[in-house]
Image (cartoon, rainbow, N blue to C red; front, side, top):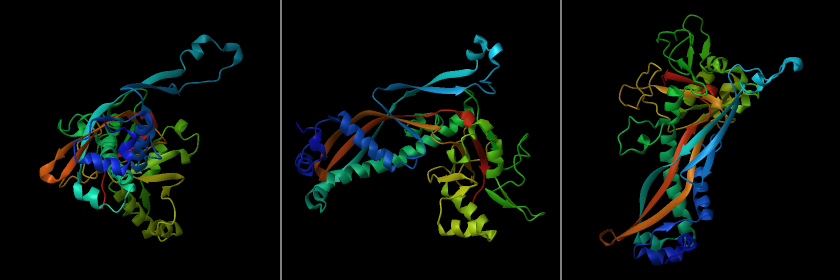
Length: 354
């Protein structure tokens, strides 16, 4: 039997690749190592809360004050009704769902590999990158509308939660098309992230109304604790608008000399956030489409409001395919996603882009 430790040794891997490897459950240390690879390859590495789960379910305590609560009271009038009603004490339960994937390793790659002992390490990094890319897409887009063969059908993704969650609060929804009933004044001009008003010639940036719509208590710790998340094509439109204004800020953005931001809020590019949504009325989750559907989202929220649960239950097994002169290595892992506080988010929908 090949031990867990030998899995990461090229010579042992080469030896056992000639026959089917036994099913291997990584021990805690090795599972941590592999999950670290996945986290490192994720766009969300520094902007989401990763939770490593020892079991299929894990409760995370969510602590916050009730909306519009008052914490301090005159001492002479302070009573039990004040401290039993103002504090919101809730739990978020992560329940991991199992996903599987496979990678093919050809005999020639093992025999002729110039990486030597680094081959197994490189293999794990390749697998981790592929896993991270597919999970990054799923974190945002998942909902029950996808076909059962798509991993995005397994979870209620962050976008779905922003549209549908009502507890502990709901997200603020803004319409970039300024055509929906009750949303005609969300922005001065509809369309892209930045539009130049034809009448006044003034540039209007949709980031500003989003910041204004964010509840004040989530801005109390400073704007640097907030994030704008968007597809990089939206960032390109923003940079083009900045450069059109012929300012030093526009030049710096065009040259990539500084972290892209609006005011003091960092802008984070998430390439796998879809740009082909159909127009939404802000009451549904919407599936990514194609063709004439050219809408995308920008979400403003607090750092680490997004939660990713990765369970330390990783198994690896293989199947020899002599006809291909290859070994197929199968990976399985368990994942869940959650949104800590929908109220601490403002989402701009129906945004067009170049």
